[in-house]
Length: 185
Image 1 (cartoon, rainbow, N blue to C red):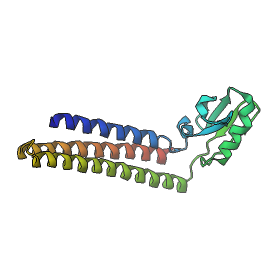
Image 2: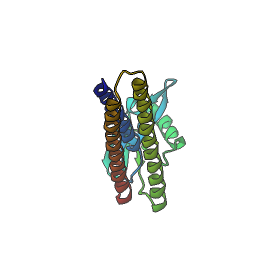
Image 3: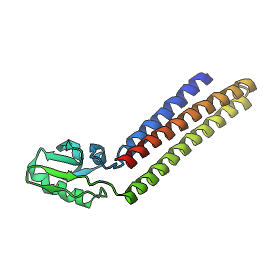
Image 4: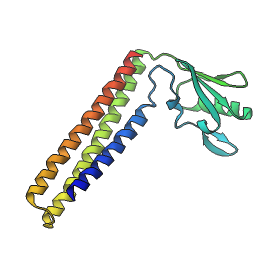
């Protein structure tokens, strides 16, 4: 039974790490990335619609995102929404496509992004530690209810700590890799 709990914990940790990877993929690194538009929506027939559902997104050059709306009537709406967003990018249009140049990052902006990255990493580590605490409490209650022995409890704690350590190490490796991309680009 405790093995199933460990497997459940591993699955939850994997989900947390995948969510973390998705979140930090939106951090601008100085190169154009469609991921910065993942949470971007535009008003389309009265409904907030994700940009990738109303346009084709492409990266023809390392510092340029091109948005080609399927309906040319919404070009001005997309431009206006991009200008009002917190992306710090300045779109321009030729009437058919919207070009979104991605300027190179200055040193101050790189440091701000790294600070934000470290904050995200700490939040994920805290989530992992909170899960550890919750599962420790659950197993302690099982021991108190005499469902498992003290040895099984101790073994579970050791296995749990190994899984926690592995996942925190994985988060730190991902953070270092992203930090390297931010500083090198």
